[in-house]
Image 1 (cartoon, rainbow, N blue to C red):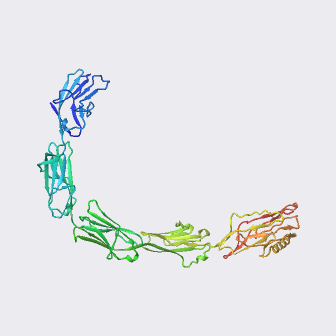
Image 2 (cartoon, rainbow, N blue to C red):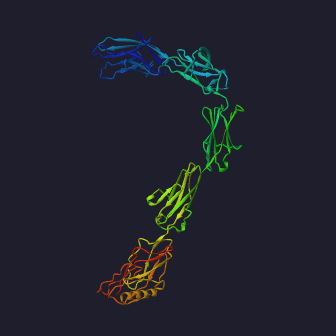
Image 3 (cartoon, one colour):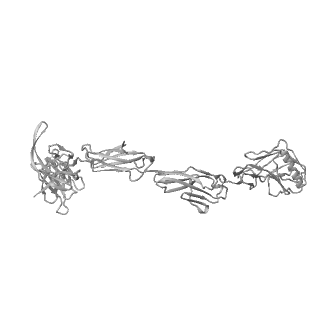
Length: 582
């Protein structure tokens, strides 16, 4: 018997040959392949060197070259030919020699299929159509012809649309073509389809011609898309679904559908043409779009914006879309203190409230409050109530002095008010990190500094002496009087005589608020004396029997300051300075 085998030209051929053994322990020794009308083998597979040696393969260099190899792993084994050509079509014989079993033979008839050659679609005038047919007018009845050349066996030619078979009737037509300067005759298979009267719905309909001649050979097909001329079906402006923002560049798109050829789009604002920034057409030509960049002002409210689409091939085929403009704007924000407040007279412990006035379209959906550029949050326990357009600060403290502003947000954007600076007036307090000990030698001058914080700023300072007996202000006079006055105070209080030397000394008020003291000598060395500045701390005298070199302690303990609010005694020890005398 002869086993049929089919291959497509240019593809791979498989010629089966059964080499399975029927006797246990037997093995293949030699496989020879023959082709009809060729007496000698065209291919050999020699395994006689043993199962542990690689078989030797040989192929006819003219008929097979390096295109052939014998596959023993396939079931059944087969001779495989690559790049099959029409010349390989023949009857092949496979001879198998075994070590023990009788030699076997098998015949294989190889048929080579020549695939379809060239396929094209032409119109009524014979013009080849590539990709598209037309354009046609509505109601026209076009004809499409499919012409197929090449292929063995002869191909069948059919028309398809949307997966449906439309026509399978075809006929053969003799043709003559020139190749290499000589005339060549051949057969062409032709199939013509006559379309019904076209409607708009037929636009972009696809008609496909298919040609095939064997199930193993590839199907060749060519398709065309129906193109038509008609005016735009619809025109629509996109981007005007809602109001537009004032002062902000807006991009609007006008889309025209269904026009063949693509529509020409123009823009008009209250009868005046506006220039677009771009124009685009879809790949299929059905959709045209134009983009207009428009910056509106409040005066554009109510004006009419028109998009006009025209077909250049069909005069009078014009459509328009018009819309009235609505103009929006981001919030205009202004912040104000409560009407009963005087921001120049806010004191610690008082209440402060602010209002945020917002003008916006649409209305603001969010209002926030900020303190020193940090957003405030509602904190009732701390006396901070930020709700909507109102901000209330209860029992305000000096730490809440600073810059406040409110911000509002709507769909058009956000804006902030100008900041309002809140000053909280408070009594003077001593600054931290001041020197509280001054070491002074005999006959030395020293400067004692009193630094304070307050709002409003301090307007005057007052210094005083204090001891266990009494509390006495230092007049704003020369230091010679101050030292005389201090001597009188100390002598009256302790019964001791002190002589003061005031050469060059004076008292002055500067930013650092200093007091410059001259040197002085005690008349008695048996006990110490204290000089204080508004001290309410008891004076601790030195014990009896103090050696002559023991110090007479000079203390600067407190400073009395004045501001526009009220007079107060600053807290904390400013300084205490021991003086040493001989």
